[in-house]
Length: 279
Figure (tube, rainbow, N blue to C red):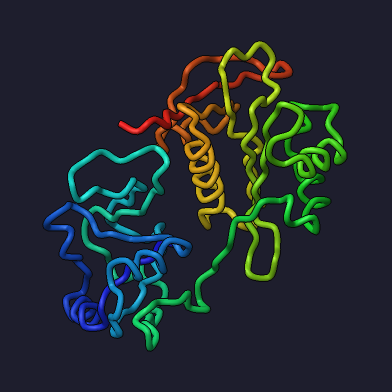
């Protein structure tokens, strides 16, 4: 979900003009937007106390201007850091037929914004604290990764979920995205060793990123990966690694660097690295 926050007056003016041109297009080249799980924090940071705001729910497929996901700009001009979230930016006017819903978004009596019921929100939790999702997560993982790890069983993943954090000289933590009704949306793992034969990379690894097909395009994978990146950064690691057979382009767009080609169970993979050091 791509959301643009503006005043009711600005929205009325846009309707009269036949298109919306955010003031930031003239100064920065793009209109600032957020996803549904970013919006409330953004509103409380920049618009606290504003009681005349609305949210535009924008269909990216209908946009006539270019949409790019990028890290936030720093007011002091310093470069973005790898662990920062990616925000949607619209490079040009927002055509009105791309707006599929207008959501009233007033602040409360304390000047704070709360998530409106129209947004499809989700939260990210450590799977060790959500054993009700172990069975489904394990079954999905066995099915998704069977061509790479044919000997894995549901018990393999149960053991992983139960040992989350430090254990026997190793580290692993799996996080899941769950919806408002506690439904499983996706998962991702930070692990010190992702079982890639012959790997010399020191780790840790972003592993087992999976989004259920019915919940793709909601930013679930991006949010899970961002959470894993933040965790690896907080643990003091200089780099984060992954390997992928078919998502190289998607990760490159998010700042990952291809480092070498390899094989896993006879299938070609690319090893990629994300620098986590502060520049």
